[in-house]
Length: 97
Image 1 (cartoon, rainbow, N blue to C red):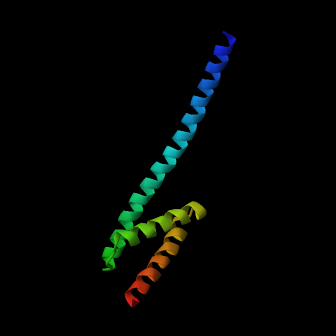
Image 2 (image 1 turned 90 degrees about the vertical axis):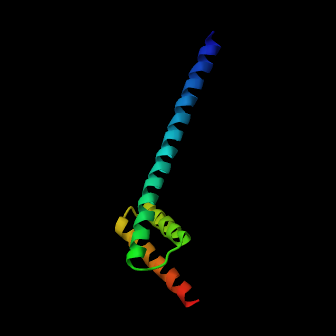
Image 3 (image 1 turned 45 degrees about the horizontal axis):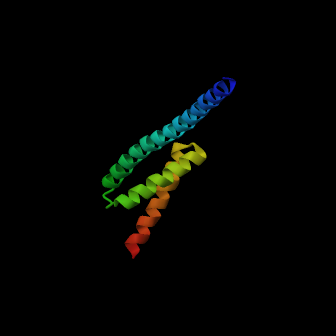
């Protein structure tokens, strides 16, 4: 009887740990998705206002850059500035080709 109580206790603890990790990663995924959605919309709008042809690839690269920088610096403005400059350089290089 004692062995079954012990196994049950271990099983419950494992379920709690697994649930904790799942909820943590789910929250990270949702946060990434929300940030990425806002970024994609914002980048597309800015490119349209500037009358720049955009590709989904360049928009995705810009948003991936933004998200990575935002995670490092936790600064919206710094991340936006850095990735905007990188995207402008890439677009300028593509025009020269």
